[in-house]
Length: 280
Image (tube, rainbow, N blue to C red; front, side, top):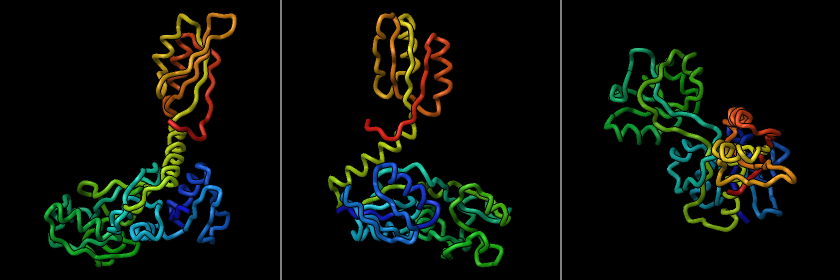
């Protein structure tokens, strides 16, 4: 039975459970449940603190997990990223009061507060900057005003929290993070391949829609040029006419402009259908 660690709370928890549910796996109905068996899919879910997921996976206690890339890197665990999951996106940045620092080298000799000491230490080492890292578990943005640190390094989503604390972002991003599927470095099983295939299918379905339309024979080549599809469109001759029916996958974010272009070349009965999961 494949053991999978899932965040039990925080911004990654609900999207992770939704993704797994759409991929056909059971998920807990009670937020207090810590373990859930899904015998139909031969997997067992463990709901853990997001920061602990990489540690458990790296130690082989569970084979697979979902966590943030930033948490994986900071843990130093012997776990491998398998698949980016396209949610929980954030950027890890330095910030300080205006005029204190404008580039990474300005941090020389300063105190930098963070909840991700390993990420920061590695980045500073790469840039040959010697600074004192002050490890905090949360509310990092308050450390400067309280005199604990001269600058901070933290996850930035909208930047509103930093702005409220009077801090300005500076320097390049330390890390671009998002939710990722990770595995124990030694694990390679059929159940893991099935999990990756299902998650990839759901993620792909979120990027595409299925488009059907009818088009006269003389406009078929123009229509196919507009909708080449993931591989190629399916084209079927309509009974008793010189029209064809076309079915094709179209990127979701281009859906409406594509419909406009198809209508302009003569396509009609243009229909768009949501995709739940695909295998490509």
